[in-house]
Amino acid sequence: MNAQNIRHRLPRRKKRKVFRISLVLFFFIFIGLGCASTHKTITEKTPHEFTFPKSFLWGAATSAHQVEGNNINNDWWEWEQIRLSQARSGQACDQWNRFEEDFHLAQTLGHTAHRFSIEWSRIEPHEGQWDTLALDHYARVIRSLRSKGIEPIVTLHHFTLPVWLAHQGGWASDKTPQLFARYVKKVTEILGSDVHYWMTLNEPVVYTYKGYLVGEWPPGVESFKEAIQVFQNLLRGHVLAYEEIKKTYVQENWKEPLVGIAQSVLIFRACTDNSLRDRVAARFRHWMFNHLFVQALVRGKAYCIGLFNIHLPRANTLDFIGLNYYTRDFVHHRGFGFPEILGQACTATVAQDRHTGKDNFLSWDIYPKGLHTFLKDFSRYKLPLLVSENGLATTDDAERSEFIIEHLKAVARAMEEGVPVIGYLYWSLLDNYEWAEGFVPRFGLIEVNYTTQERNIQPSAKKFEEIIRSGKISF
Ligand code: FCB
Image 1 (tube, rainbow, N blue to C red):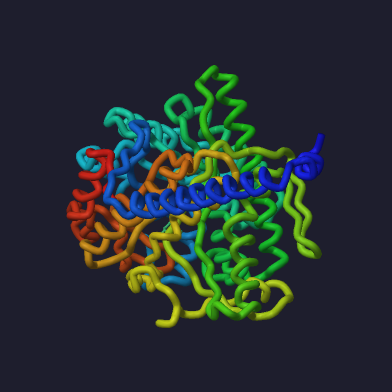
Image 2 (image 1 turned 135 degrees about the vertical axis):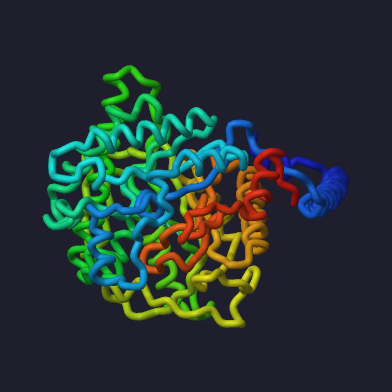
């Protein structure tokens, strides 16, 4: 018997009664929902605390070339000598010799994790020749962290390549993914017993863009064709490295590690909100810069009509995703061809909604809300997320404290909403060499005097420590 039949059979009086009851019910449900939604608004506004899980990874990140000093065998060093007379890395923070002291400071500041990178040009200074002293050095680095209760998170490629490899085409060469996997295998065999978190590549898209599309970083190429080649080889390099790491751990009978990448994420907003063309440019950038690489690794393929059709040896080669989040960019339309469809950056105007109205030292918009947006957005991959970099270049340390607090609130909000965030790493532990910008931008929780190499803990590092020790953040 269906609903229609019942309706026909009810007498008129009964019908009216049913109608009245429905009306009352509807009224109560309506009021109820109304109350519930008001209640929700009130709860959100009520100050409350979020408690991070005990296992949450708290710490900071660095990279070899930016802190170690004297990495004379890599392509960046070579580039600096030719192109950057005002911004050479030199002895940087001399961390090659001072890691013990720096990790001790991290420990006193309550850090429970530390992300650093291994310098390929030190491990393999000539093709196929391994430097055992360099491998020993990194074994000591890892032991030093572990002895202080700090979890090492190891990046295998952070922008630099050995000179010998750069001279034979770097990532544009189809041989490089194999060579990368061979280096990764060596490193894993020697260091793996003490490492649980590996990050194969740092910001592969930024690397491709800066080095092969706009030519601002080594090797200074501006070729769309080569950029696609590099992009594809980086993807293959990751997959091969992933397999090598996993294989080694099985062979050695070590506990299975987690392997990921550090993906740079930038909010892209249209320069003019009601311009459809600007919005298309911003969308396209968002897909290409923020998602394409990760999507390709998850699906094992990447396709864009007329541009590329990439098939990888296998899918699902990410155990977690690292997000490097700093800022947002405003983009306007430049054309529908390629690369014009990626649009062009414009400077933000007062008319645009800026969260804090502040820029950092490098004129990067400060936009903490964006971190929440990305954590939610990347939760679509159903993988643990690590904030693998987030930081502020400033000479006003009070701004750094505020920056950290606001971004941690964004993390906490995402976690409250169910996003699996496993840690937060501030960039950077100490001031360091900021690539083409040299030593002027200061990102450090610890200030470095580059003449004396003295370290000076900033108040923001103490603020961060307070949050770490309490394991809580208040809204
Ligand atoms: C990121 C890089 C890192 C550092 C910060 C400021 O894009 O991964 O090396 O330069 O920016």
